[in-house]
Amino acid sequence: MVLMLGACSGGEDESASAGEGNEGEKTVEFMHLWPEGNSAQHHRVVEEIISDFEAENEGVSVDVEVLSNEQYKDKVKVLSSSDELPDVGMTWAAGYLEPYVSGEKFAPLDDMLDDGLREQFVEGTTEGYEIDGQTYGLPLELNTANVYYNKAIFDEYGLEPPETLEEFNSVVDTLNENGVPPVALGNGDSWTGSMWYMYLADRLGGSQLLTEAIESGDFNKPELIQAAEEVQNLVDNDTFMQGANGLSDQEAKSSFMNEQAAMYLIATWDLPNYTTNEDVPQEFRDSVGYFKFPTVDGEGDMDSYVGGPGVGMFVAENSDVKEEAKAFTKFFVEEWGERAVTDVGIIPATKIDPESLDLPQMYVDVLNDLNSASNITLYADVQMSADAADVHLNQIQALFGGEVTPEEFTEAHTEVLEGE
Image 1 (tube, helix red, strand yellow):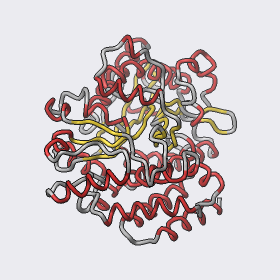
Image 2: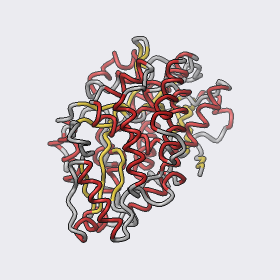
Image 3: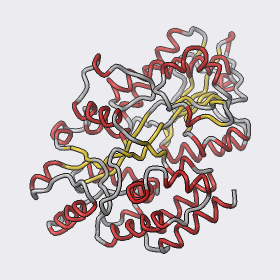
Image 4: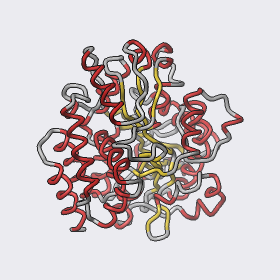
């Protein structure tokens, strides 16, 4: 679904899309990925921030285009190729950034950071957006992935949150014996299955294994092969809901939230659905708990997470209204932090004072986990270049579908990474 929203104020003249409107009015084009339909609270806060920015900046309006996640990525790629990026948009860190930076599509934002903005970010969050010493994106979120579970279903069958893969498999067996799909997974989007593979690799080979393999271009490590074997063991044990490899994440999420599956591995961007989102029945929100990804074969640090900075904001290098685009971006980042916590229920990349806010207990627990985290491994597809990420995600699909062996899976990664 693609939602096209008109200018929030004063944007009737189509010439505004070129940056200049009637009587000197300037328009900042802004594209984001939080549709009202499935990201209601994000969407509402974005609209409020835009409205406040326009109220404080007479003569500047913001044109908004909203797309779903995958549609957004596709459109940004197309717009970049024709040099028609919006003035401000969303981006991801590391490998995702590289082609846009090398193509001089994104503007460096260090002047904004050096103007007092840097101190507002949690340490280490802006580094993921650095290339060759310059920063090309400002992160909005800080995410870690956990396994969320339905406490009512667990209670019904006498289950406890597992701490080892053996205990997890026992939970899966009990759920299957009682006709309850154990895990909601929409691996049609592939990044969802990637998180399962990443966690298994982390537990088997340590927190640096995957990142070092990506950097070195060598995936032919025993632990990475074993992680792929464990994925296929989970599939063979009917861990994931039927048809998982063809479902979208949204479909999987709906299954979990409709209590049609007992567990769901997802990052903390989904916390609102289990805490503050009043569109979700309170009874369901009260029934959701979470646990850290289990250890495997007695190995692994449960305080090591898959996650990292989530989406950030870029400013287009060729923007006709770059000054206003940077002003809007700075305003947005500064306003997003506390509102993200209190109104959306997600963890922002900017610093907050939890003691000063009335937060749901699950949110406090996740923040405490984050404070004691030993490592956060950035999502594999984000660490990789776009071409390598495509191979990774296609191989994740094939691995879950039993179309490749674990050895073929790792060899495909080595082949594409060595070639870069």
